Image 1: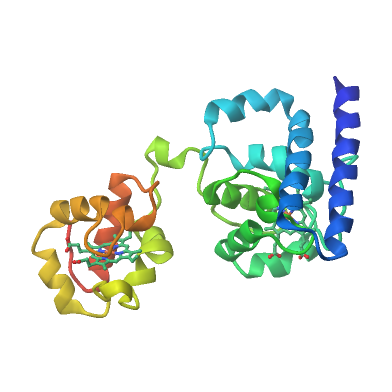
Image 2: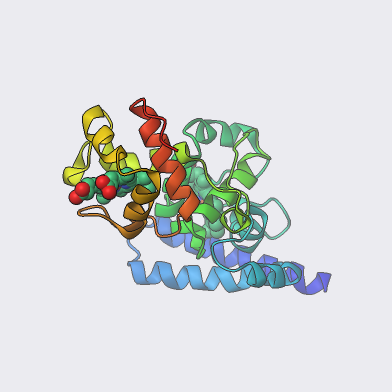
Length: 244
Ligand code: HEC
Ligand code: HEC
């Protein structure tokens, strides 16, 4: 068992490295990235054969940061035998390497990891959702000097929802700050007061379904109904209205 694992890890490291060098030379077409990701991922999977059942049971979207890390990120960000060390890679526990990254905040790191950066493939070669990426990043960064509060695994399912403020800032204010697509601006108190007269339940239904130029759930399909409601309450609080 141990023997199999360590051999696989060495293999994973070698593949990740060969990917790295190809990146370094510049022009690999996107199709090759996909192929490289596909090569890295299944091999790295072997390492957590024991936890794989848990991952499958939890399902895409609700895997923990630890599971994502061990399945995908450990191949480069881990420090164990056989892990690769592509240029610049911030290893878990390397506070100096993480400090400037932690400084930009979790949201920016999620964006950066999602897009990929130099030798880091998009999403680290994983099929992780944004939330799962956030958990995996927090899992690594919190062992490297950060104190990120990542969304817990299965948070939405467990009913321990994201705060209205969090949702509003990441989703709703994109339009409601600027008035994009004719959205009532957060600075336009009168517009909100008028909408508020519908009552929060009707407004919640309206946002869940989508309304005019506003996509259903503000465009974030995985928002739960209570999360939509608390985001609305947060928006109204900003205009001084205590809608509940
Ligand atoms: C093939 C190797 C590889 C894998 C697999 C990998 N990373 Fe990375 N990662 C890197 C490298 C290299 C960097 C440094 C990029 C740079 O700054 O040039 C990096 C940087 C990062 C950063 C910092 C980004 C920034 O803006 O400075 C984050 C966050 C990150 N990785 C998250 C992840 C997560 C989460 C996973 C797993 C889902 C993962 N990585 C998997 C190689 C990898
Ligand atoms: C893509 C832009 C966009 C995003 C993102 C967005 N909205 Fe909207 N929103 C709009 C527009 C446009 C309207 C006006 C629709 C109309 O009345 O025709 C609106 C209207 C509303 C209304 C009034 C609805 C009504 O029935 O009068 C509420 C409440 C609201 N948004 C809350 C939210 C919340 C909460 C979020 C985040 C989960 C969000 N919005 C995200 C564009 C957006």
